[in-house]
Length: 169
Image 1 (tube, rainbow, N blue to C red):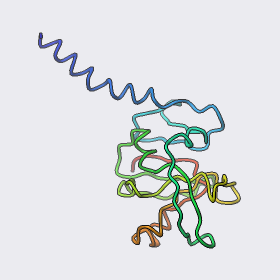
Image 2 (image 1 turned 45 degrees about the vertical axis):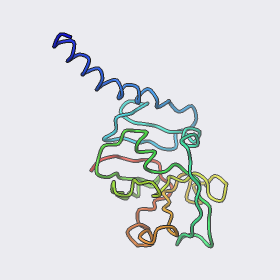
Image 3 (image 1 turned 135 degrees about the horizontal axis):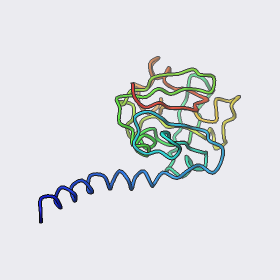
């Protein structure tokens, strides 16, 4: 094969997976509940990735039970693992800034984007969460499953009324 064809084939092999994964991120058809921006490879609205509730519900959600310092007794939470959400948008950074409807923001380091880590919860005890009750999205860690998550640092990262994520510093 000619060197120019080898270079073209190599270039195509590098770019094709990125193009395919970007095409895999559909556009929301309902109300947008989460917008992800920053250092991401996969977008569906300009340079952002927007999600409606139906999109989040189809991202292989996870359910766990845990107590929190904000609720009474054991609660059940269902949501998209943060790692899965970051993989879907092709996040490439050392952290993210999560922002709530009221502009409160927290930093969440990449070390927290792990299997068994936090979820972007959209159900509490099987029910959608209203804005009045910390919804519609809440970053929840499995506090009872991992002792290290029972810390002020982790509690401070557990942002509710989440509506924006900026990937990067």
